[in-house]
Image (cartoon, rainbow, N blue to C red):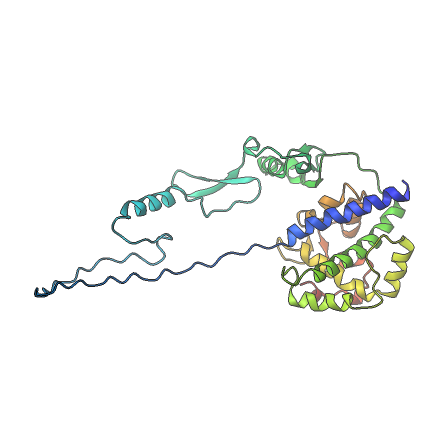
Length: 323
């Protein structure tokens, strides 16, 4: 492969994964409920007529929080009944299921999660929605894949089936030993550049926490930092040797970004998917690299194994850096 093709491939790699990470890092904001002001009824007095005191009618107040939709009684009685019936008949409204499952109600009107029928998945918009499973089969979309995986739960085939990479299945060239050694050189530099780019664009986006910003700021302001660009492997190796301290935090940061489900200090195949899935079609050594990181072959990558794969020294591995 010529140098131009390699450069094009790496540029596409960085662009695709960068977009993917922005999606992963973008959070959702839930709006806080607002309280309605109580309605105060005005008393009506008729001039010249005696005021007849009547015994107050005590109405039974509804239990607070019993009905999430509270409106005034009177002309909206029918609306209240419709809302209550709607909620009572739809217990799945606030019941969430994992990917591949949908909510249904049982005989006692209780919500439960069942496997989704792949035929009910929306049709893919384009080929970019296709994904390749570890069974080397192309699925129309992630919905079709996870619905199929759910139907295979409890079987040997279902246990082995995972999302392999984004895009239709294709021939992935074998990773040679010298290529495997080159992979972490580019990945280290890319992780550092991702953090720097996030720092530059993070004035209003809140993509980094305050603690993360302080650590990245030190890297960003360091005059010896190697600027982002297409660099030779020799230059990347030399920069890692001379500016080793700049790479310690980015490696820890990436581990923390992936260790989410659950946060237990280990990376599973599922947790690695957001990083490896978009990389594999462009970096054929991705799978070999992660397999190599799992030194004890227990199907999980601990922080120590992860840091070692990127050349971080044992004395510099620090759980406190995983924010």
